Structure formats: C-alpha cells, structure tokens
Length: 191
Image 1: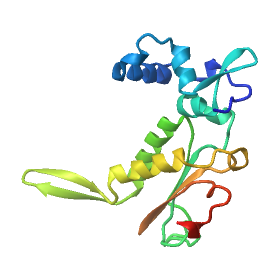
Image 2 (image 1 turned 180 degrees about the horizontal axis):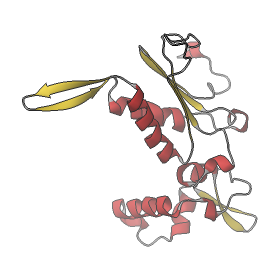
Image 3 (image 1 turned 90 degrees about the vertical axis):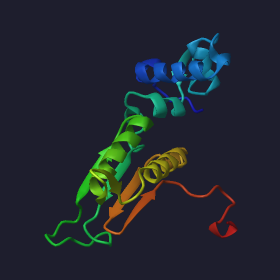
C-alpha cells in the first residue's frame, strides 16, 4: 500500500488497468456503479499523495508500464546451468546455458519467465494413436504456481528490494529463490 515517490497514473499501463476493472465488473455486481478510482483505491492499487492520485507499490508492480524505473532490482533472473553444480563449467567450458533478466509488470514477467523456462527444460512426446502431446520435464501448472508464489511472496521491504527473484535450472532440478526470510521472531525450526 506504500505510495511510490515520483510515480503518477501515467506510469500505469492503461490496457492492463482496463482489463482488471472490466474483469472485476464482470465478476461482481457490486463494482458496477463504482468509478475506476474508487475500485483502484479500494484494492489499494492507488492512493492519495500530496493532493493527487498515485500508484502504490502493488499497483505499480501489477500494472506498471515499467516498474523497474522506480525499483531496478524487482526483476526475475533466469540462469540455466550446464552441470548439476553452480559454478562448474560444461563440456565446452561454458558456465551458463542461458542467462535472462526479465523486467516489466508482474503478469508480463511471469509470462516471459514461463516461456524461457519451457525453452530450457526437457520435453518429451507422448504418442496417442495418430496424435501426440508434449510432456514437459516439470508440469506447467507447477512452474507457474512456483513463480507466482516466489514473486508474490517475496520480501518487498525497502532493504530487500535490491535482489531479484532467481530461477536456477540445472540438468536434474529447478530451483526458485526469492529474496527475504521469515518474519522477525520466527525460525525455520518453528515449522
């Protein structure tokens, strides 16, 4: 709900905002009579700041044209390694098979991350009579859910905004790491 210093409504993608508002109005009668600003304010995507309406951190991350203008490290970084161990080189001396930094609003980052991950994981083919289905090494729904959780539940406190969500692809596994840790007072042993 934090207002973003220097951000204005012009920093939000009008198409993304319009699609969000249309979906809310389509799915719930209560929003039919509400104006756009009231809906956005109710969902804490915008707030009043110094006499004008401005995007919140959530609003900018979800609907911003380029949130990294204000938060350069709130990105997704995908690294594909040639071996099972980070830092080891492959047969040709390569340290990475792929290295991509993804920017934009969260929905765009998830979509682009999915495309890059699918490009870098193993695929098989299940033949059914004359037709067949592609089988990914990891179920697509699993990958998307893990990405959404990593981005949505990362630490957005000011001190943690300097780190990207990392997706690490190895020949034998997929690791997704998000910045942050447990809230103060909790320990991993508590779970």
